[in-house]
Amino acid sequence: MENIYDIHLDKNEANYEPLSPLSFIKRTAMVYPDRPSVIHGDKTFTWKETYERSVRLASALTKAGIKKGDTVAVMGNNTPETYEAHFGVPMCGAVLNTLNIRLDAEAIAFILQHGEAKIVFTDREFSDTTKRAIARLERKPLIIDIDDPYAIGGELIGMEDYESFIAKGDADFEWEGPADEWDAISLNYTSGTTGNPKGVVYHHRGAYLNAIGNALDWNMKQHPVYLWTLPMFHCNGWCFPWTLAAKAGTNICLRRVNAKNIYEAIADHKVTNFCGAPIVLSFVINATEEEKKPFDHKCDIMTAAAPPPASVLKAIQDEGFDVTHAYGLTETYGPAVFCAWKEEWNELPIERQAYQKSRQGVRYTLEEGLMIADSETTIEKPWDGESMGEVCFRGNIVMKGYLKNPTATDEAFKGGWFHSGDLGVKHPDGYIQLKDRSKDIIISGGENISSIEVEDTLYRHPDVAAVAVVAKPDEKWGETPAAFIELNPGAGNVTEEDLIKHCRDNLAHFKCPRTIIFQELPKTSTGKIQKFVLRDALKKEAGLL
Image 1 (cartoon, rainbow, N blue to C red):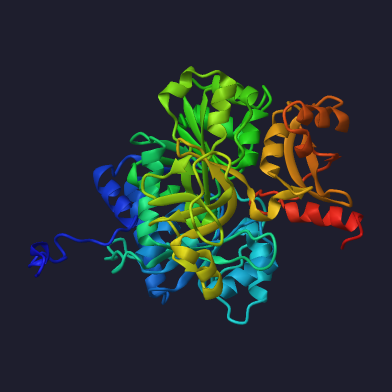
Image 2: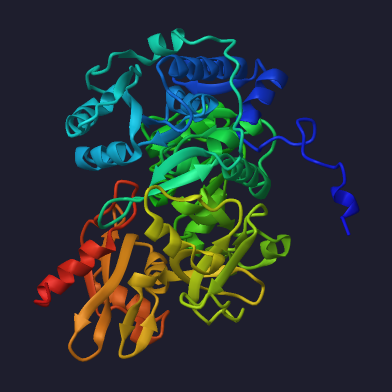
C-alpha cells in the first residue's frame, strides 16, 4: 500500500532548497546592509559592500573561465580578501582551497598540484613561497596578488591585483547556490606530521550546519564582534566566516597575532568572541601589564587546546574572559564537540570547575553521533570513564572524504563511523574526555599511560608553558614517559627533580616521567607539537634509529 504522505507531496522549488552558507550573506546584506561587516586597520566595510565585493569576485572568476568544481586557492592572511573568498569562490560553483601560509614551497606545490588549482590569490607577504611553489608545477595557475597595505615586504608576482580583478566583475551577477547541497564548497589539507597531507573535502550542507552549530552551541548573541586570531586557512576558520554572516556580526581582522594587538582590539572594538589555538591562549594568559589594555565587558574564548589549570582558569576569568573548551578535526569542519557548561558547576570550587572544563564534552547539537568505540569492531565502550577506545563521529558535519584517496576514505569511514585516531573515555554523564592519540599511548611494563594525563599534570605547574610527553625506550619496562618542557618567561630555577616530584604528588608513580628535557618544542605550521620528532630523537639516543 502506498504511503499517504508520499502522494503528491514531492520536493519542489517552493518547499526545498539545498542548504548552503551562501544564503547567510545574501540575507544579512538585505536586512543589515549598513552594519559593519569587516574592519581591517583603518578600513571598514558594510555588509552591503562585502556582499557586493563577493558577488563581483564570483563574476570575475566566471569571466576568467572558472567553472563548477574548479579549485581556487588563496594564500592569504586574515584580511578582507580571504573573508570574501569564502563567499565569492563558491558563488560561482568553484571550490575554495585556503592554503596554510606557514608551509614551505614544497608543501604548497604539492597541495596546488593535488587540488588542481586554476587560480591562486596570493598575499604579497607570502609571494616568495608562492613563486617557488608555482615554479615546481608543470601546469601553472593564474596568479592574482593581494596587495594588502599592512603586509610586510614581498613583491607583486601576479597578472594583476585583487582590486583590479574584482573590478571586472559585475555587481548584479546572478549567482546560484549549489544544485546539490552535497556539492563541494571547500578543500582543506590536514597538517600531517609525516608524509603528504590529505585533502579533506567539505560540502555546502556541512558548512551550513557547522556554521549554525558554532552560534547555537557557543550561545553567540546577534551582532557579535569577532576577532580573527584563528587563521581563516585552518578548517575555513572553523566555519566562523559563515557563522559571522549568519549572525550579522563584525569581523575584526588581525594580521599580527600577539598579546598587545589582541588586548587593543578587544578594548577598542568591544570584541565579544575569538577562537584560539594553544599559542593564542598563551598570549592572553602571559601578557605583561604593558601589553594589556583594560576593557569593561565579557569576552568569550573558544579554545581547542588543552584546558588551562585551575589557577590559570581563575586568573583568566578574573581578566574578563570566559573559556569554552572544544574539540574537533579538519575532517569534522573544525569543532564538533564542546564542553557544554551546566549552571550548577558554577557552585563548584575552581579546581573542580577546571576538571569539568578539561573534558572535551558532548557532540555539537547539529552533529548526530559521537561515541568511544573499539577501533576494530566499532562496538561502543561502556560509559564508565575508564574504558578507553577511539573517538568516532557520525553526522552531517563529517567530511565528504579525502580527495583522490579512496583507500584512506574507506579506512576513515570503517563501520559507518568516522574514526578520528584519538583515544578517550566517556563518563557516565555522557561527556567524553580525550586520553591520547592512538600512536601516542605509552606502554610501560604492560600498563597503558596516557601522555595527555601526564601533560595535564605538568601544565598545572606554574612555571610550565608548554609540554610534550612521549615514550622513551627502556630495556626493563619497554617504554617510560619522557617530558619535554618549555618554561614560562621569568620562571624560577625549576629543576628536573622539581617537576618529577610535582608529578609524583599528583599521579600514580608508574605514570610519572623519569626524564625531563628542557627545550623549545618542535611544532607544525599550525602550532601542533610534533611528537614524532621527539620520539625519534629518543630512539636515536637509544641506538634504535
